[in-house]
Length: 79
Image (cartoon, rainbow, N blue to C red):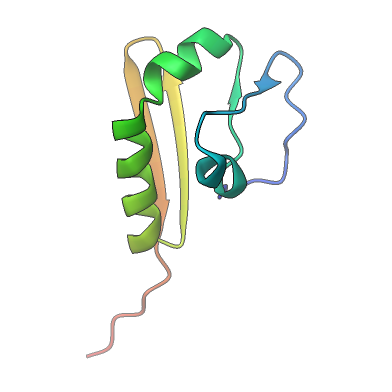
C-alpha cells in the first residue's frame, strides 16, 4: 500500500520479506536489503499491518536513525 505509483527508484531494489502476506500487501524498496531486514522485524511488520487496517494508505521512509510515517485517512467529519 503506497501513496505513489513511482516505483522506478534507480538506487533501490525490490525486497521480499519472509512473510508472504506482507509481500502481497506492500511494496518494499531499499538501497541495502540488510537494512530492510533489520528494520522490518516480524514485530514491526505486525504493527504496520495493524496501522494499515486503521488508515486507507500508509507510506514509511527510513533514513539515518529516523523513521517517517505518512498516513492517509479519508474520513469525513460531520457536525
